[in-house]
Image 1 (tube, rainbow, N blue to C red):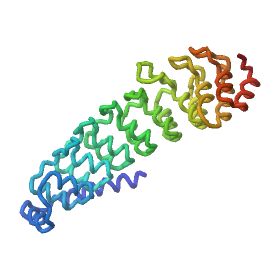
Image 2: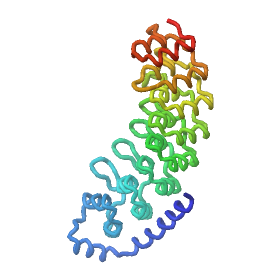
Image 3: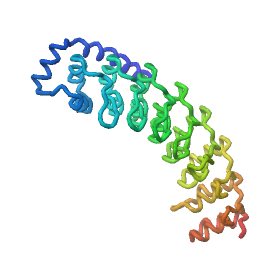
Image 4: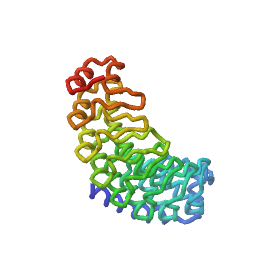
Length: 302
């Protein structure tokens, strides 16, 4: 991976130097020969195509490198999103605003992180990209990388001091996003870097679920075991008094493996939520005979 990143750095310098060589007069001639209008709309169209030479002509003539489209996006944001490393190099060398925001308050770093473009993420960070910038939805580049399972990007962001415990508008930390999507290796990395395994949002954005509850609901036994091994509280409750065990039982699908894991880890099989329901009552409501038997064998009582 280190080789790929440094290869990207070499490309960054070479493409920028080559694309900067053309004169304004020569660039105008090239646009005319290709019947390309000198407009911002045309610039963005060729950014989308990854056409480094054409974008270089626009910049050589004097097009503002930070011009925005109708969504408030800059060429750098779009190039970063699509993984056009050579274009990112060119735009940065022409003074692109690394931390520019679109209408949703997103940055080029968020776009690159969301799509797993690790080399571009590293380059943006090296030029001063704000690693903890938040979007309109309070998500960071780390949230984006975690929900999409981009391990290398997550590692790069954490190495750049990304805050693993920031909360987005859904009430989720980066760890929660990784758990929701079932990205166990990413979850393990986050935990090793200090992510709070017992975090729960009680501010009103959510029901106050913990990562363990989400893993239980999704049947992610591997992630649940990891969280428990790292100190997750098996009996932590939501605002409604529900536990991870209740989350596992009420979720659709086969959940016997994770129910056994939670019980073996000390889950209170007779806990009641605010509706006075127990895990056993939920198993009966679900008509799940197997879960009912497991609970009864573990001392559950109505």
